[in-house]
Image (cartoon, rainbow, N blue to C red):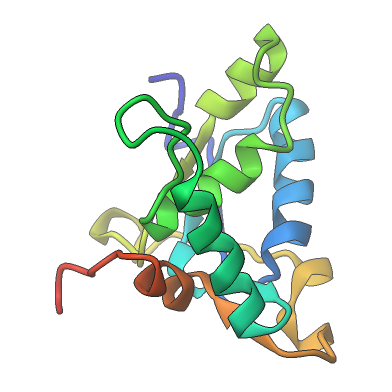
Length: 148
């Protein structure tokens, strides 16, 4: 894998708005940075809970179950899919940028002591509307965490 953990930037995604975070991260990936995102399940999607869940469930029914298109049910894969949509992934620069991205649920042991940064422009405190976390959304569409 291309990702070097020593030079990678570690970002804590807790209480960050998914779309804003994804655009900023996609731009940084295209500039050549390696990025690791922690706490993917705590990322926030703005909007009404019912409409967000309804749209996610609708996407799951599109296509053929074995032939695709496939939509993720795990929070780390969901966040990674959103960022993938903001990259030119069919070009070599977009593919290389996507390979420099790693998204994880929670905080693994290897990142407990590492310093983490956050994206101030994407904080959910700036929201004036309702929102749902990615963890709650993926539980609605079929993900069961290991602890449950």
